[in-house]
Length: 311
Image (cartoon, rainbow, N blue to C red; front, side, top):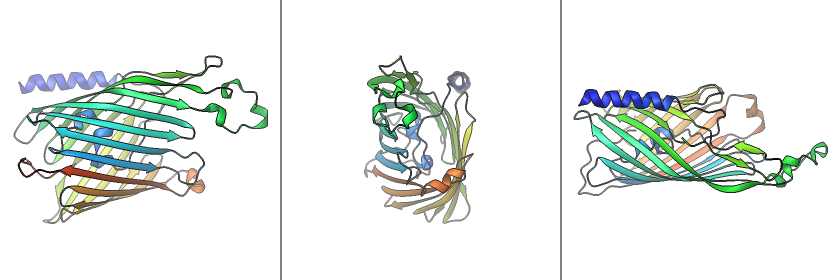
């Protein structure tokens, strides 16, 4: 049975690897290490408890029209513990361009051993895209540009995504394609269009080491692949102190380095903050990148928690 599962997983990985497109437009997160649901539906149910996460990211603060992202995630296991369901809402803005994505997530867990499980996930929902091109200030030479004489039509477009999540108490591997359907949006002038939903392939993983009785070390990585763009990767190193406080740093190729902290209160409430230091020349024109995250887990005394959650 395990051989069959591994073969199915291998085939799924190969299939996922074929879905690529040009452009890189999905929001990025520095604190993905604490909630992978935003990119992988197979992550829902992994907490073993009902929980919510709210995240706000303000990128390149000080620049006019700088990117902002607000995310709300909900997940819970069902009674069998092998099934997880969730909801993920993302509002992403860049200038006057807006994307509101609403997706329902589902995962099914297969136990490979007493401590290792493999989750298969699928998501489905829609994205509402709007872009008010007529509100941009144009240079005098471009006032007659027909592409800015009308707005891109606001539309609700369908979305389907898939993912795999392999985990134990000491490591995890995540592979996902959160957007399979290619969507495009058109304005009313000259059939102008823009690809709104490029397909991103995410591959991530992490390990946990005990450095001492009160200190744990967690290195993680995430790669983002899109055809036509360089593969981008994030590397992070985080330390958990006395099961209460995470502190660490990250490096994002060609973009930034950052600092990450998180406080854990009563194993239920978590407050996190990340600050990115841009490594490109753009750092001279903004006041940094700020990301705040709050998560809460509804831990009930009757529910048996297999192990503390480190991922």
